[in-house]
Length: 90
Image (tube, rainbow, N blue to C red; front, side, top):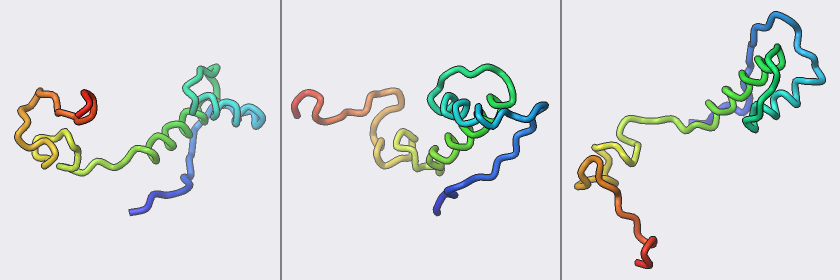
C-alpha cells in the first residue's frame, strides 16, 4: 500500500494568514519551535499534523514486536527485558 505524496488541507481561520509568514511558521512547527498564536500557527499545526500522520507507519494487530503474540517475543515474560546481542561484546 503506497502513501499519498500530497494532502489537501482545509484549515478554518478567523483572519487570512500573511502569505510571507506561512513558510516560516510551517518550518517552526516542523522543527518543534514556538510560533505566536494566529492564523499562520493554525495552518502550520495542520501541516505538522499531516506530515506526522504521513510518516507514522500503520499499526497492524500482531505486527508490533513487543506484542504478546509476536514471534519475536515468544517465551519472554511480560515486563522482562528483551536480550540484545552486542552490548557486552557477544
